[in-house]
Image (cartoon, rainbow, N blue to C red; front, side, top):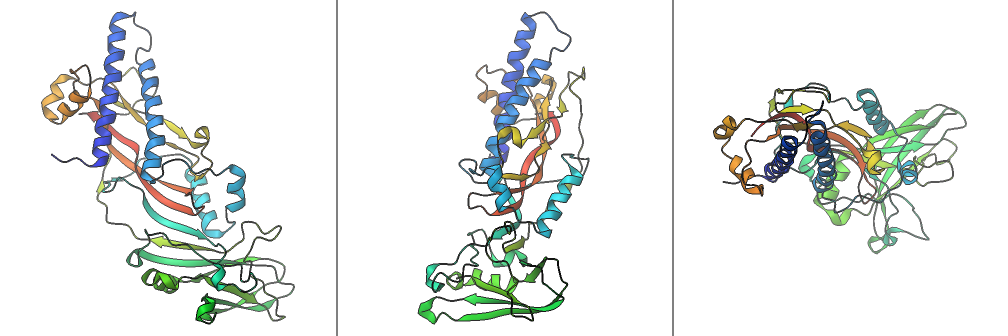
Length: 372
């Protein structure tokens, strides 16, 4: 019988929880009963669940360790741009509330990327003359595929104009000096801007990105300028004093595979519940408690956990319980109270290359608990 990585993870967690349950039940039979006999047990399970979540997030993001990005660095790198602000506003509205909803089956145990925000870096020396231009190279990872790109927008911030003016925004593709160092114009827009206020402008660059993905050796970067009627370049392309967070970036939207909706159900309890049966309990994960400043949003979310007793009568109903029995040194585990349905969370975070990722991380919220 074959099991997915996610399935084996659930089985291992089941074994650990069952062992914890059995040890607690043995202690309860030897000690006087208390007003909340399951409280200590649940506290142990909560601690185990938090440790597991830390490991799962890093594993699902394919990271060996958490990125070393401090809160101050996050503030410097975070673009002050509309698409990012919309995501942050969405988290502010939803908070950490995992409200009742239809949940979906997850076919992959790793993170499913929805949107990537590529920060502009300095081009290679081969395309520069006397250290110019300083912008913009966008590094593409192997996960990018032309067939999955739904949208690619280049975001450029324009400095305030002294008076109402027309601005000619131009994007040119850079080539190395060995090829003549030509700048091939790929997009040109005329914009009418008002005086006294800077603004973000977005340009469709899906075609440019598609060419880079099909022919990676052509990606030497692009040059951006935005001249007004007086010949002033209003485009912010490097971090001058006071312009941090205003550098260009590319917002790439990727497609996802189809998912099958399934309704959620199960028994829910709170921490003060006298319920002894298998039940789902609330658990909030706070990433600031982890010291993980590299996670931009959410700062916390409701993960939940399972705890409670399962009757042996369920044993034949769940034939894979023998795997849990083998994982238990006591060798006599019955059905376990374990997650039977989990759902993903959306997360906005920095990776180790200081790129901003908006992705979906599967199996992070316990939606339903049961005996298995």
